[in-house]
Length: 140
Figure 1: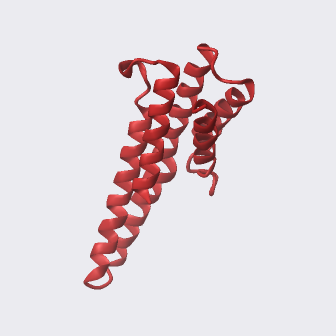
Figure 2 (figure 1 turned 60 degrees about the horizontal axis):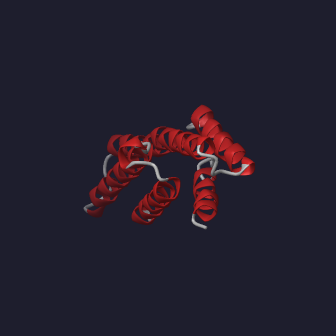
Figure 3 (figure 1 turned 90 degrees about the horizontal axis):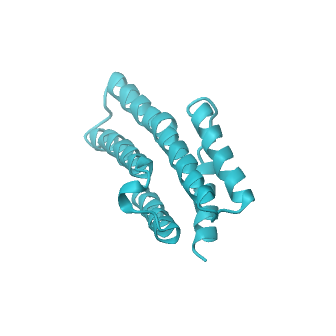
């Protein structure tokens, strides 16, 4: 699942880079940091599953791993997603390629994720919704 999310975000980044004609060194790297956070979360969660294979790990190990993976995903990865949404929306808007509704959606998504990451549960799905709406708009 993590690989699928990473692939879709990289595909969206490639589409936006090509459509917006942004040089590779000028494109925001926050999307790559988001993917790195997803893989780190998957590694910690996979380590917990592997540790449970030989029997249940101690309560301290389980609690630590669960908290680290939860914090990586809901706080740090979502903040990188917010920065990616804001920077991509800003680039598209300044080049005149984003409609107003997509600009409003991108900035709102970024601000909501940036200000409430880790505080409001089940807020994370708004980023994939923004990615799919922006990818479908820019891929025409």
